[in-house]
Image (cartoon, rainbow, N blue to C red; front, side, top):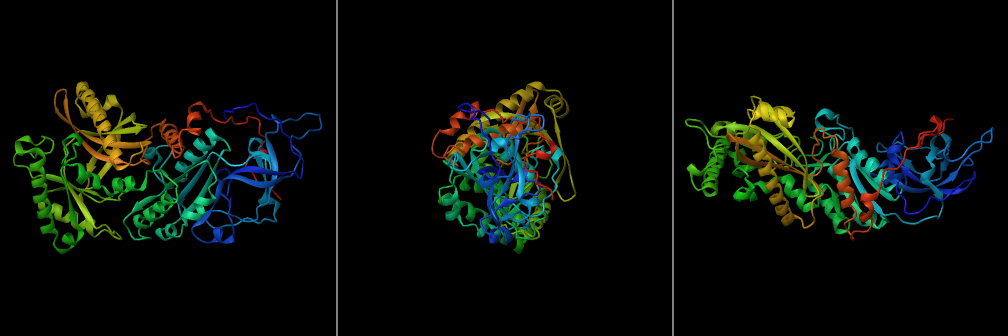
Length: 536
């Protein structure tokens, strides 16, 4: 860790009262101090999972061995005893405060200080995360960081970003939830008051959905009503949301309502889309389908000014039945997106999504289909395109769901999807980057603060040699799949960390670029690895 002053030599004697910087993710059992027994045995389980906590030293440090050697370099860990009485993990399992095997641990000397040596930290983070069973996500598709509700993703932020760059100069309060009901129990004012950092923020690693609690088959899914009510409570208490986005912007993105707002604006190239109320579908799916197609025709006419002005990639071929897409808001991993062709297939798709088990969605989106060669996924970090992925779905099943996701290198995408037309790819990238800038300005209408990171997905349709048409497919919130982008976690979480200091001005944030990662001791004895508990 970068230091503003020379390191101070320190030594500890057995029995010294100290403070240690405790990190839950460094504990094999995931235990953390909780304020009382109820906080550990009732849901949501809550406590300060990273931060300074009182302890006592169990053995002189640095020790002197029989040969007269020793020193901090050879023995980088200090043996300490926790004195806090209440410890739990996300599952409600507790530690025994009277057992050496539970209370005696080894801590890195860098994370041990005399009690009262310093007060306050630069950053306080509220983390709300999933506390139930973890879904096994496809790492090959998601990348090393995995999905944004996973332990791996959160560790990339807390351990590989906050701790590596700030050292023990932050604290994390964590609530482990398993339902929307757990979200409703979070009390924002007292939690906000407990956050002592000079900068404070909230990070919510969950997937809001419009589905009844208990009906979702993936970890991290909670009802959007309780989710946003809880987040807005913390925002009202002065805790800005840094992950994924401020509540009003996040709700706009998740609901997909931005598509109906922008589809008449030429510069954004959103294919025409309309909204069908669920009641209409339940009453008469065929009539609802007919109404949706009529609405799209009217929207199309206003947007393009006539059939002759309609983009070739949207306009059906001669004698061809028009194709479209049906989708739900608050949906994840393309799970509720179905393709259709014609009125009858649309009616079936509408009925299928409107009667989805446990779904509480009040409406369904129907959108014109845009024929395309591939999707260009642009990772936008701090206002600039930092990475591009070229991808597509190879097949559509009998129910209209896209299957078999594939991604290719730029060269392979040119050869396989653009018939070797490199000029068309150059134009596609140029047009997409221009649209990214326009979308970023539009997003400033939804939230005045610049966005740390977002992914914008575009549909690329080859018009003729050297020319393409580009349409907006999706604006994907921070928390997007990094699609195995090697530098993705470091780049995205670095931007996220910088945004955490923007609540009161560029103070600690000004020194972030100069920070280096904390050195990892190479001579740690196996019995003295930080976080390892003493055996009986």
